[in-house]
Length: 255
Image (cartoon, rainbow, N blue to C red; front, side, top):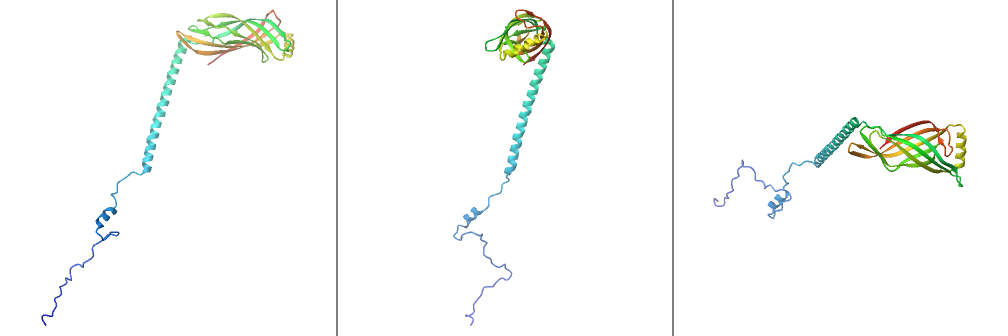
């Protein structure tokens, strides 16, 4: 009886119950669990700067560089303008430039007639005086100067002003020959004859003279002297010296 008794292992009631080992989902029981575990572990998180912040910083840097370039450019321009203005002011105070002027001494009509095509042919001989009122500035009258005579917005004739040089406070007398043809000569001739009966014929003498200014030894670039002389003469008879009853001349400088 004693031999048939079975001995059973004693169970420790206080011991914690046996549990199955923890297995992560997705592990294969074929022994590849370690490699699968290493593959599925998430990478260590690194602190990165968002792309929006990087773009904003880049745009701020670019705009800052552009602002600096604009400020430098504006500053250089202001400095350059200041230097030019100061130089011009000093030159003005030293040389005190004045515009050269012209006056009409005499006017003679060599020819004034109607052609067969009913155009009006005119030939005037004009004596003018060119004055340089500057004490320290020389004037070079360049090629291309023009002198013309107009009547009621109609150009009667035109001639070339010769090329010459004027020294300081120089006065030069010039003889200029003017010729021209005008359309609608019959109407214009009749108007001139009617105006001649009054003894006061208005004429407009225009001057366009390119000149170069010399300051000491420095010769500046070419500018233009534009003049307008309003004349009143007593007659337009040919081959006679015409009396100039009134003359009003104005001049301006064109760069």
